[in-house]
Image (cartoon, rainbow, N blue to C red; front, side, top):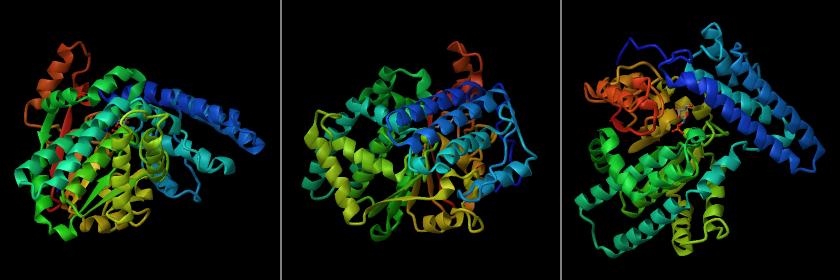
Length: 453
Ligand code: F6P
Ligand code: MG
């Protein structure tokens, strides 16, 4: 693959979404984390927890100040928490950097690890997920989309069970439909909600909105992924999902996974989760248990109980039979990009995952942040072939299907001229910087690599 790779995106590039992210989105996210920490200890009677909580809240405020004052990022020097040494090494290798001028992706990962390290260093807060309230509230507010999909799923499962066989063309169309649902499920990322209204989320989740959104998929390699799937003998067919957000997106991923299991498009599905709270909304294994609980709680979701229960029973039954599994790895919250999924990355799980994915029929990589890590978050011209932007991951033997709504600068795989066209369109809609069409969440890419380049 390419020897020469383009430069990273930096927080002082005024044409990058990193610019406003570092200056306004991060301080907003941290302010909410302070509030939720305060809320948690204000409801506690445990004095140690209250005292530690106060220190954590103050430390998050100080972190926010570091960012707005453009301070230097400091070393963690904390060997008791996995992979922080890797952050220190990377920071040292770039000779340090400051918050508002450093590489966007690294600074962003580092910020979430700073927050996490505060909780992980406080005995009464070890398992506290500071983003939990946000994750759950947004899931609850997605009830219209949740009902719609649960009803659709139950009907479909009954039809699948009733049919003797389903022809390949029908299965392919259904597969496309559920991939679409899972793709746009990512449009409800909580870290973007600061500026979005609940109404617009709801409309995104509606069927009509999804049909319209299909026009906004800028490249679509799904047929290649479909052929790959069917080329693997059924008994050996495992599909892995590198998950992104909990809540509604997780729900749409689950629906896609259940459909694939029901329709015997795969023998097994494995969901890969984060080991710690990450980028506000990302899925941890414990979020699955919360999801099951919320789905069955009629005080939260008070309609279509039979359909919701049916969906939960389906997934629990696959789980009991070992056909559905949740795993996590430290690798996903490290600072390294996914080019480090290889036989040499021994530091915190890259090698184990690489080995595991060798047996996967398809690794479905969800969401924006994962896409940034697939492509190194670099200034690839946007018509660069996807496999080129994967660098050495393109020859890793891993069959990757990226489902990504575009919420950051990096993008590859577009037809020549499309980027220029969208820059112009974005400007004509009253936006100052044309390139930022790619961070708006209005467009998406479906890209595939067979791992053999
Ligand atoms: O802060 C930017 C970012 O990393 C973007 O890439 C994206 O807007 C968001 O955070 C995470 O999005 P997703 O949940 O789709 O990975
Ligand atoms: Mg996310």
